[in-house]
Length: 279
Length: 296
Image 1: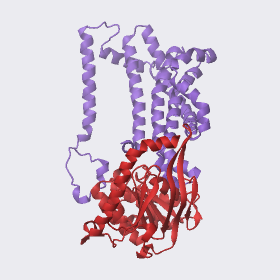
Image 2 (image 1 turned 180 degrees about the vertical axis):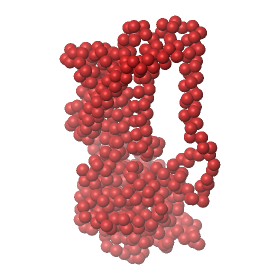
Image 3 (image 1 turned 180 degrees about the horizontal axis):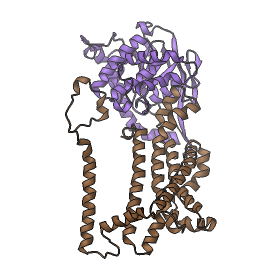
Image 4 (image 1 turned 120 degrees about the vertical axis):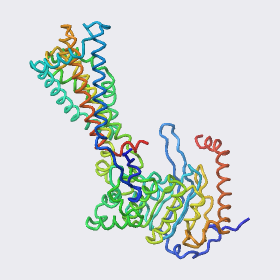
């Protein structure tokens, strides 16, 4: 294997490290495996559907699904809805981050803020979001603001709770080191507590993304706004358009995986030390 | 009974050249403890501790775990206040941490997101006017050189072994040139081989920098090989059982002359062993009764 554990890399002398030859295509191996894997999956899907074992009404062929997806993009029914969902989602996420991080940090840092806010935060963090839909419709109608609100309400609490947990779990011996080496109150926050909390913030945002996507969908499915991927899903279901239904589901999966994976990537970049800290 | 010089009774006035200085740290009739608000009790960690550390001395503190050694060092560092009594450094009562005292932690306490050199810099960048900026680079390079970490400036702590991390911890403690080096079981988390090598190096470093050291350990051998004096602390609540002078010549880590094989080392060792094993057994038998007595 070409990978050298980082824990060992720098403690080894140059005399210990030898160059080895690795195939030029080694890095493409993972991609190739994924492509083959997916190809086999869709092929199996196609074959099972063609065998007619399951009613085609709710299990269409993979080829029909791809055709529906292609047509949807070609005639412009899908793209505007993706754009609507994605922009709604990103705006909602941005609002959640702007509210969630400072409030979470405040709750972690101040006992008073924690005591006052935590009953509400925990109640809202645990309450299934769907329960809020009737009230939100009552207040905001079938407007887009209602869809945005449900995204924010879904995403903001995981972010808040994680930030709070980050501040509260700061390694006490780092705080002791801070005191020994003369950090002021401000320095304690800027040099110890915030950097320590950063990976928690990122995993909070990660959870916020997952929850926010659920919020986005229930808003579009139940909010009756008439736009977004959730709306497409709803309509395809009503029209017994199984290929379209599956096509939208696959697009949603791709979108979610893309968002969450890019956060994972960011998480590793922002805090490469985190894995070793936990062991 | 082997004769082991006891501090209270027959400590020679000027045994070693480097204990001949003036009193630097004075702990006078200190009691310390922690309040438990919920149970409305107070755990007494230390009782009636009086102690003087002279300038340039290497004081080792041994005792069973939970005997309040760490509380004692924390009071000298300035982040635990005694319930009664006073801790003075250079005759001034300790009121919080200061640049004249630095600490090496058992769990290293390095900032994992900072490189080695930035971790060392942490010790001299916080206090205003402590070390002027242009001087810092040279000071850091010096400290890293001293602990044998030159060339690892850009490494992150998680890339280093335990022993190397603690070298960073020592460099960080030394870079501000404190008068007093407080070490809280610094080698407790490294393996036995590394531990011995680190002890040898610490002796060499201290011979060069001439710090006054207060060193906590629960290894008897470590205390004898490093210390000028050993304070034996009994447990629950911690009281000073005995203070022992270590009259072994320095340097103690000498390849030609293994100090651990000398008769004197054996004498001191068995004396300490007896004291501490009494203590360990006593703690076991007595702990229930004592705890009951304390909360009542």
